Length: 394
Image (cartoon, rainbow, N blue to C red):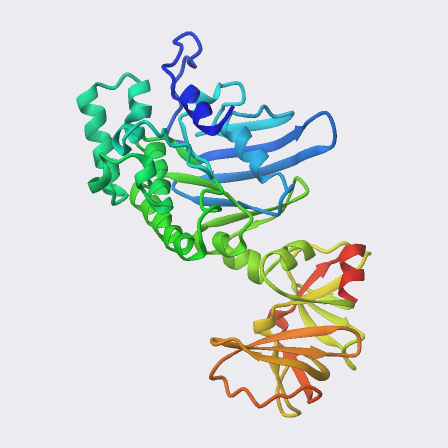
């Protein structure tokens, strides 16, 4: 069944005998609560004990590569897939056994699933028509929602007469017109070019703030997640790797996967010599002396360790510079990227990358030049590293 057919079924007039006897409350703090959610298709778990909350009015993004379980999680929230185990709470009430059409959730697919034979206004009004809202009232509410997404002048057009970005906003208006308790977005910008995608990221965020709806957003695009989210749930192989604000997951990754998936980083294998609070003294083959690092999460007592340093946190230093860590090497390449300079340095064990803002007195660097790279203790995150990551890093 295609997405349009799914939505048409979803918007059908409710069967009174199937409607939950008590209305879903709207006063609970958390819009959506996911507890120990699991999903298996007669094999390994594709979603494995996932837990997170979506607060009222919060924009939460499920971020991960293909096969990480993010879309399966969204489809279980929507009611299109049944969990193998776990619970889904909407405003504090379990909806696991509530059919999709009664969950009071809006959804936007990547394909938008607009009805081609209906006008823009009719598309937006469709959920209200299925709810037996009077014709005058549903047209009024649909027109009002189109104004909110700046498409009031296009209400009489057919979907094929709109641009991709305009179609996306129509789908968004249709999902919001019946005042859902939360909105689910399944990679809605994936089919658009970068310029339009960047524009619509801002528009969706602005509409969300204006309407005040809670959103669960699925994407594999790290920049998209960083730009739009209040909170990011980073997923990998069906499990949650880390939950936090964009700043937290980027600057304080808790696992080597988060460090490498969310942006670029330098992962340097190391040995932990001592720990005190959230600081550690480490040794690495790249340095001739001990260095400082920050402990970003609870570390296992035994195992492989490494430090994660973002390219923009490394800097060129000299003998007089103060630094909590320093490695030496020679320049492999120096590329000007407009806003920054990308410098790749070969050290005794691996290559490291620096990103230096243009205008920061970047010296003339040629391949073979000897340089020293330093960092502050707060910019080196100490992590546990699995064997695969260790082998890749070295």
